[in-house]
Structures are given as structure tokens and as C-alpha cells.
Amino acid sequence: MAGCSSCEQGGNTSPENVRRWTDKLSNVLFSSTARQKFHDYLESRELEHGQRLLEFWEKCDTFLIQAEKSEHHKQGWRLRSPEKKARSPTGSGTTRQRHQKTTMKQEAQLIVQFAGSEINFDSAQMQALYTAVESGERGAIVKAIIEAKQTAAEMLEDEGYHEFCQYLLKKQGLLEDRK
Image 1: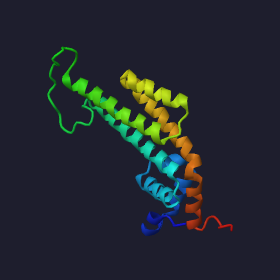
Image 2: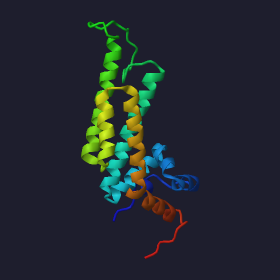
Image 3: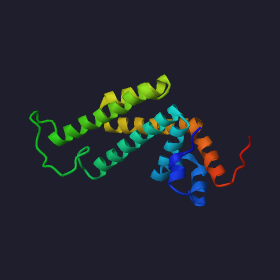
Image 4: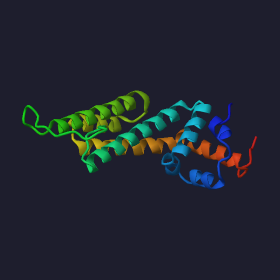
């Protein structure tokens, strides 16, 4: 089997990073460098389900970051520049507010589609995602995506994370290779 090419090509990983990344999965997930090394490891070991889980986690993370930005900064969903608010033709809110909600729902639908085809969630988890997205309610969508992201992280524990930790520890000489 091939080695982790980014780990080998990217130079040595510091002992501090190895300690942090092998301490808990969240330290890997919240570091772009560690996440890339983890992805490369999963890819090199052909752990496809782990790769899909990591991709799903990243999609959820990106969605939630954008949701938070749009809420706290009163920006439209994925809008790069400010725009003037205009009353909608129907008189129900502003055009920007309606566009933001629709686009947020569309982004959430893409996440649900990915989960349905690529992630092995149980029927209750999938139903929670479908129901929240179809409701169109921002809070329900965000809550369901947070829960799905957490479930994906829990599944990653068994889909390559422990092997990745062993790989890093062996590379640092902190774990003997037992053959």
C-alpha cells in the first residue's frame, strides 16, 4: 500500500502537531493542514467511506460558517457585496431576504442529497435532515446540519481516524511497527 504522500512530501510533521492530532479527532477536523493530511491518508489507503464522511463534514462546516456569517453580519447568503434592500413584488419581506432563504435551502438540499447517496446515516438521521430542510426554517436547518456534522465526525472515528493516528505515531517513531 502507498504511504501518505502529503505527509511524506510535505516534510516532517512536528511532534506537537502529532500529539495534538492523535489526541482527538476534533483537533484534526479543525485544522486545515491536519484535515488535508487525514484526507490524503484516507485516499492512499483507499478508505472511500472515510473520504466521503470527511467531505460531508467539510460541506456541513462550510454551510454552517456561511450561515453564521449571514446571520451575524446581516449579509445575504453567499453574497460578496452589499446590495440595497428592495421590497418584494408580493410585499412579503425584502427580495434579499427571500433570496437568502431560498439559496440557504438549496445549499442544505445539496448536503441532504450528498448524505442520501454517499453517507450511511440511519433512517432517523436522514428524516431529520429532510424534515428540517423542507421546513425552510433557518434554525431547524442549522440544527439538523450541526447534528449531521457531529454524527459524521463520530462515524469518522471508526473510518480511518485510529489508523491515521497509528500512522502518524509510527512516522514519529513513537509506536513500533508490529508485523
